[in-house]
Length: 102
Length: 235
Image (cartoon, rainbow over all chains, first blue to last red):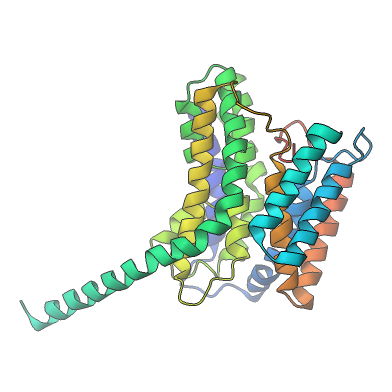
């Protein structure tokens, strides 16, 4: 129980600290506003890499399922601009590849 | 009744009417975008619930942990923590290290969460990776209330996660079909949002996006994916 409380506290500290450091009433310093502008893009890129971090390029699949499925996502998305379609298409492609092909 | 209180009541009444008019449209705008997360979260959280069940915990444990900790990777780590020797200090510092990225999420959301009043604490509490990326990349349609839009996204995502964890804890290891590869739904989500951000931004945004990709690939090559402490999202 205490372990869970400790984990909750630790997690919440990381989430609330920026908001406590820079409360609404004060205008945050310029560098922080700059970070607020560029970070969303950088983190967007980071999360894609993060989600693919366990892709095994040297293993038996050589990362081909991930690559193919990502291509499906990109092509579908540039073609139809439908978030649901792109995600469903990519995921189904990936599941078929890992379950039946590799 | 003085004129003044009458005026205040009238104002409150009007505010109430406006509010009723904004809550549902915001839900309708936000819900479709959360759907892929719903699918990914239910299964990912279910796998976490199953893991807890196979270690002998009742479904109440994964349900409550999903509700209060609400950061996926740390919940998987906490299973091990609960089973190893009691050490809250280690648990606390691990949670800070695993959650450190949220510091930057907060910085990015400072402006967007400005002036949202009572919704703000909940938005901050519920800001997991997926909720953050949906909210930060959202182009909120005209006439949709920003606060309610963020709130619905945050709340729906957490509900998916808690529901999945509870279900997993209840069914244990009897999953009805082969879900191998379903976790890719979250990878695809990140990729789609990245594409949207890319197309909607100018040079500085794209430069920042590239920095994000290059730096994290470099970090991955240098330090490895740390298989020991994080769950496999993409399997």
